[in-house]
Amino acid sequence: MYCRAKFTLTCFILIWVMGSAMAQHAGITTLESPFDQYQKQIGKTPQQVIDALEQHQSQSTVEQAQVHYILSEAYLGLTYPQKAKKHIDQGLSLIPEHKQPWLHHKFLLIQAAFLEFSGQPEDALPLVEKTLDWAMKQEDLWLTIEALAARGHIHNVMALSAKALEDFQAAYQMAPKSGGEINQAELAIDIALVYEYRKEDELAIPYFQESVDYHRAKNNLLDLSIALYGLGRAHLHSGQTELGKQQLQESKTLAAKVGDVQGEAYATKELAGLAIANEQYPYAIELLKEVQPVFELADNVFMKLDVAFSLTVAYMESGEYEQAQHHLNLTKSLAETQNTAHPKASISILESELLAAQGQFEQAFKMLQEGREQELDIIKQNNSEALNQLRVAFDLSQKEKENQALMQQNKLHLTEIKAQQERQKLLSLLVLFFILVMVLLFWSIYKNRKHRAKLQFLANHDGLTQLFNRMAGIQVIRNRRTEQPKLVLVMLDLDHFKQINDRYGHAVGDEVLVQFSQLCQQHLPEDAIVIRLGGEEFLLAFGHPQMAKVMQQMYQLKDLCKERIQVGQSNHQLTFSAGMTTTQENLPLETSIQQADMAMYRAKSQGRNRIIIYNES
Image 1 (cartoon, one colour):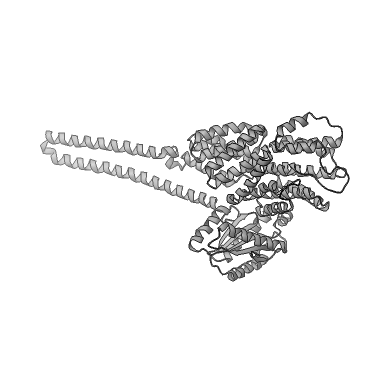
Image 2 (cartoon, rainbow, N blue to C red):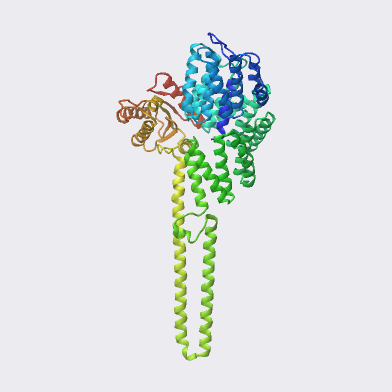
């Protein structure tokens, strides 16, 4: 997830690299020469642009502001946010909105990118909304496209993938196929990012490929490196390991060629992940240690966290628990201090695995084990030693009996009785010992199964609503289709949910999501599959293919939402927009989900609070 942070931000920069304006107002409406050429050069040789402009002697305030603007773009492109922020602040201080509105709004977009990168997408969104409103009023095509793409990136970071896709597709449709200041090939990577975020890599690959082909033809090495990074990751996730590895290697080589130190580190980090997957733990640790100081120097919090997380896994799998614990503590510290979008469930699961690997169970079991790897060895060793002691004792008793029989024939009967008692005593001790061992083993197995069941639930369910999460839920639908090919799918989005969060607070928004989830579980059929895709977006699957029956149930659910869901202390009535479709045997499940999604967007565009059945026409 954290590899996506730099990737998302830099793709955001790619849109800016082509930006200018056609606004009808006072002040500059496009970058002046030579700054327009410097801007185009960022995608090829960003470090050369920085070196040239750091020495530039400005003749006027506007010229100085343009220097700061290009430098902020270049530093963000190379993922040095703090250096970029310095130039953003200086540029904004030079350019008041009433004197240079176009350049001022360009700075607002790049300031929003910095805030997004710093984990503050909620603060970035108003800046982008302000610029989008201004650009549309001025009928500035290129700035409107930039702002739409910028808002799409923020929505994607906020897990509002449906809204992100809506913004990117709007920008894509407004842009020409070729030529112009921004074209569709340059925006393709943004759409790919949404599909990547939604783990729909097969859908992302064609858009990544479109971006790769364009930048390769234009010889934009930095942009090509970024696009190859995304394409390589998508191929890895879709099972094309060798192809993905080759593309990541090329991305790394290109990043090094243009001086993108962090871009090189990102590709190396992905290769380290591949090494972990292939159980090449020492090699993975070597790669991760190589990139760790790069992200430290850049104060790249997301990647510092990601590297610490990966090192924990690699050291744990290598049996180096002390190092694993050290990096786990670092991971938790980074996640807490930065309020990161990094998933807390993943850190909890990793911590549980590390504790289990070190054998930290209840005190009774600790007496037999000191760690997960040593547990069975200790039990086996203790069992072996106990059996040897019993065998020696038994042999001695037998020899003693035989000696006594030879020496004292008259005491044979008494010796046999004593030997029998001794055997019974030793066997009783052996039985008791094995009972104790078996009890402890069964207890350990029970606790481990209970722990695994809990971890499995956390991995497959949304932490807030307890519904299936996206990955697990769609797999359940796939399994259902093997028995019942035709299902009714419903894509559902709660109307005006952002207004609920903004007006009443996120705690009230979370409570609304919980109430809605409980309502679905209580009033929908038992065989209905309910999935929280993210944010306020849900996917429902019904086992009976009668569209009319499902439509009736959905309208009943709409009425129940208005009647029973309480939005804080307000009188707000919760509604939703939904799109419906039926799966077909000859169509992939992803296509049917897209159809339901398209129908849902149609419902939203027609005023929300309605349910629409997908129609190809």
